[in-house]
Image (cartoon, rainbow, N blue to C red):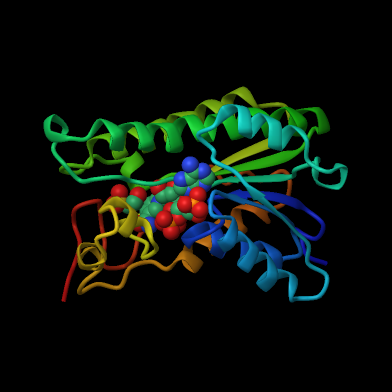
Length: 256
Ligand code: NDP
Ligand code: 8X3
């Protein structure tokens, strides 16, 4: 029997990239999935794909993690069979822009801070009390190497991921003794829609980020998340930093 059989897992940012790969990987381990993101069409397609495997069940949740009232309302009124969330993967996040701080866009800053920091807080605040009352649960945050290092023009995105790192460590302290585990998986370069979003839809510039190297795939990161989530209950994987072999730090990258 799988360690994740019957586990109820909520994955935010499940419509793309790491979140979608994590959903597929968790489903393969027997988890029941609540998949959240704003793009309902993407969630519907992923739900159909996952549910085509007999025995899998998915609840698709159209959700903007920046909207505190929406987060509280939707996570507070889940159908009874979905209320006892065992695993929360706080993955929804984005970068916008790559500019010097004094030339940066207020709108980009607000979107990153509202999504990566406040969104993560709103979802966590709605889900973790239930875990505490049940005496078990697991929060896996998707941080970044940008939460450990600051790179040129990465200022606000790096600050948001440093905040995620602090929140991960703070949560782990606050939840000590409750049976609830807190992990972070912090990747370097992963080829997803991340850079297209960062560069506001400029696909050519986005492709340049990964040119000449072999980046991580979303599946590589999903595998690390599933590994954290499938350890025995007394084991808490605190942190995984995952680089492509061609990357050694936020700025040291080998290109052929
Ligand atoms: P993608 O752009 O492919 O996926 C981002 C996901 O976040 C989408 O599903 C998107 O869904 C969701 N999302 C964004 N804003 C919101 C919102 N307001 N409410 C709900 N969902 C939202 O990028 P990745 O898969 O790469 O990114 C996933 C996480 O991984 C992020 O936290 C990112 O910072 C982190 N990361 C990425 C790295 C990389 O190199 N790619 C490296 C290190 C960390 P929708 O638009 O439908 O709402
Ligand atoms: C995404 C990786 O290096 O673009 O968090 O910040 S990086």
